[in-house]
Amino acid sequence: MLYDRWQSIARLNGNRVAVFDAANRREWTFAELADAAENTSPTGGVVQFPSGHTVQFVINVLAAWRSGHPVLPLEPGQAAPPIPELPPATAHLKITSGTTGQPQLIAFIGEQLSADADNIVSTIGLSSARPNLGVISLAHSYGFSNLVTPLLLHGIPLILCPTPLPEMVRNAAAGHESVVLPAVPAMWRAWHEADSIPANVRIAISAGAPLPLELERAVFKKSQLKIHNFCGSTECGGIAYDRSESPRTDPLLIGRPMDNVTLAVNDGGCLVVKSAAVGLGCLAEPGDRLGGGRFVTTDLAELSDGELRIVGRASDIINIAGRKLSPETVEIFVRAQPGVKNCVAFGVPAQDETRFEEIVVAIELKPGAELATVKRGVGTGLASWQLPRHWWIVDTIESNARGKISRRQWRDRFKIESSVEAG
Image (cartoon, rainbow, N blue to C red; front, top):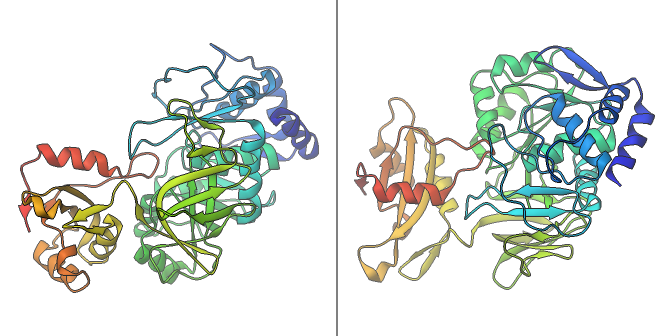
């Protein structure tokens, strides 16, 4: 199914440029990609593992589609996991990020993969006249769904940029009338601070982690470029998108449902996603949360007038003497302080058993900033019971390659670190 659709795209576009590799300034037309796919044989076992950030990744995906082999994209250097027995007609496998537990394999058939591409192209307004600038990982669900499948199933050209370094991104975008740039918040911050966001970016997208409101506003004020918040999940593809053309006023606002996606909130307050793009299921832990066109997330959500707000994760909620607090609430107020570069909040068992848990915030300060000033600022916005018990100054808080920050990993690290200042 996928390869037949690709062949139609290749015939329709012929000698139009499909991929421009900015690393070596090489262009590949749709006809050249089609020829390369026909002359490339799958290697290894049944499941194929494309990797890297070159046109060969795309060719290997096409070769797997042609031969009917399932595809499991891997990051460079990432070991292939054990592959269990696959459901019939499995065409694609994704690995969850593992920020809330062990990574899991999710299976998809071709129709589900193409449905996600259709929803993304329709909702965002991608066009064959405006290439995607590929800086994010092609192997990650975000990159594969926003860059690779729009190229192969819709004819949206792709510019491959080998690194997110500001000058490289600007050079990769040069020579094109306009581009679409999907990225993660850390990239947008680096480009903004280096004053290097390409002037020809027409659609700016941020996903993978919460987009700070102050960053969205700062970029808009400086360049009049609106960064559109995009929310998706490995298990179900695109969920919601901020279609507005001006900065949000609510940091918890995600946007409206993607085209052909229906959202609801269950009795436990968790977001439920229904669409044709939802995966078959989790291979290691089959259950009723995923499958049949429905995915029950662990995101605590609110829906109002068609707009989605994510207020926290059920697995991250901190229990403070019976009162429940989302760590995102703390992070929003901490990040809003001028002296804070980044932070991550989480709960740990309290010494006083009546409190159940205490709040820890790991905080990366900007040069010259003082923690006392940050504390005073946070204290004006949060109730006393919501204030962190532990302020833990760390050298850096960086997202991983997928734009994620794992509270579980920071909680584990906190247990063995001694340089903690009691609040």
